[in-house]
Each structure stands twice: as C-alpha cells, then as structure tokens.
Image 1 (cartoon, rainbow, N blue to C red):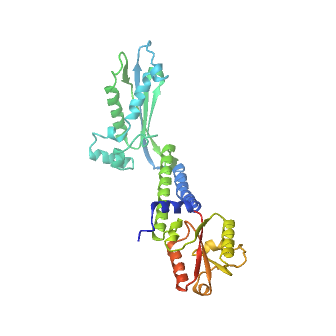
Image 2: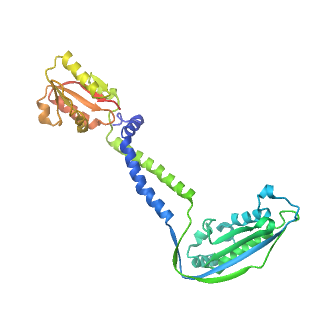
Image 3: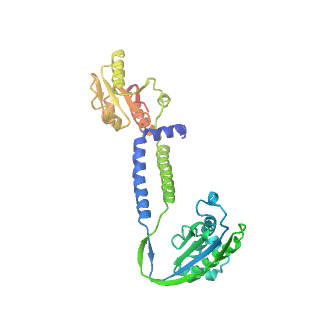
Length: 344
C-alpha cells in the first residue's frame, strides 16, 4: 500500500502547488490576523458607574550632596532604584501572597475580576491603575493608586511601605522616608476607554498564527497526498512496463518527440491521452500532422484508438487515475508508445 509514498514526494507536491498553497496561506492569514489586529487596536474597557478611590503616596530621599550617581542611574540618581523597586514588585505574587481567600474574593469582586486573575496579575494588569514616578534626581519617588476598591488601594500602599522599609538602608548615608499620603474618592460614570496594547505581544500572537497556518497548509497537503499520491519520477512509470518515458520541459519538446516517434516508427495516426484533463487543456493549440488530441479518455474514445502516447505531469498525475487509464488501454490491447511527462 505504501510503496508509492515518500517524504520527498510530499515535499515535491507542496512545491508543485506552491502558488495555490501561497494563495491559501494569504487568504487564511488575512481572515485571522486582520480581525485580531483590529480587535486589539480598538479594544476598550468598560468603566462602570461607581466610586474610584485615589491614593497618592510619596517617599522622600535624603542623600549627601557630594554623591554623584549619574554614572549609575542616568539623571534620576537614587530615585531610579526605588522607582524600579516598586514597579518590579507590582504583581499578584507579591501583592496578594499573604491575603486571605475571603479578602481576595472581596477585592476581586470590587475590581470586577477573578481571584485567579489578581493572583496572576503583572504590571500590564496594573497599568493605569498604579502609576509610579521618580521625583527629580535623588529627591524621591511617588505612586498614584486609582481603583474602585479601597481595600486594594490600602493593600498596595501597605506593600509599597514594606518594600521601602526593607530597602531603606541599601545605600550608605542615604535615607528614604514616607511623607503624608493623600486620599480621595470620586464618582465615575459608565464609559468606554481605549486601553493601551502591547505591540510586542501583538507581534508574538501574529507570528504564532502564521506558524500555525503554515503547519495547517502542510497538513492539508499531506492529507491530500496520503490518500491520493502523485507520480513524481521516471521510475514510477517504468514499473508499469512502459519502455519509453521522456521528461519534457515545454510544448516545443513535446512537438519534437511526437514528430520523432511518428517519423521513426512509421506511425500513421497517433492519439494523445492523459489521466488529467487539465494537462490536455495545455495542448489545445498543438497542431501536428497525424496527431489526434483526445480531450476525454472515456471507453468509447479508447476503443477506436490504435497508437496511444500518454502526456502527464510530475506532481500532478495521480497514481489512481493513471492506473485506471492504463488498464483500460491494456484491456483493449492498444499500442502504448510511451509516456511524455512535464517536469516537476
């Protein structure tokens, strides 16, 4: 059953249908990628009516005036370290590591999300909810927390305080202390707000889709090939005891071979048949004396033939169709001159 299959033949089939495969790939890409891009760019988040709690905290840095930390931290000085410290720990693993399930569920409800989402949250989730900025060079760092949950605001403030206290002595002769916090709340109306999107994440998604489509097209080619393999080499014809097998590049080669056969074998009439009607369509303009092109290979046509030459094409001709045509010719004892096959 599997004597006609090979990985090389599968690759040959994919290459032979490269234009069709490319068109299919492009159509699928447009159909899947365009909606994803539009959806990502136009993504909106719904802000429901309710209360937004605002918490503003600031931490003051006191550093010796003689310290020159520009070489290490650009123009931000020690403020750069503490800013990055707060931002890098703005994730669910740190914020909610010691929060009870009951409190976490309450926070998730107030933020209109799930406890799992909060536990797995990262800086992207807290974008626009928590904004951390440095305050000039060596002066300090500030954080603005804006969420619909006072519990969450208080928790984040507490976690930031713990971080600052833990790392307040990391530099010699440098101190950092919290200044008075400001709290407020305001009513928010229901509206749609465009949320920022990550170009990097979008490109990763597009790349993943394109890879999946390439695999899908290859699988489709494999399925078509495995159930109906094609003839891809000269030896595939010779195993049917066909002595004359000639590969041709174009119609000129075809004409020359036909003339040679007619003249050297004194053939009065030669009929051209093919197992694939699309190949015959290429020969409509072929006009050679003593050559008859049959557009259909039904039994009525075959019975009236005498000398037959088969015109096929590597990567297009199917074993099943070729074997059926060959058997019909042998059933009626037709003289098979040979096979001419367009190259792969």
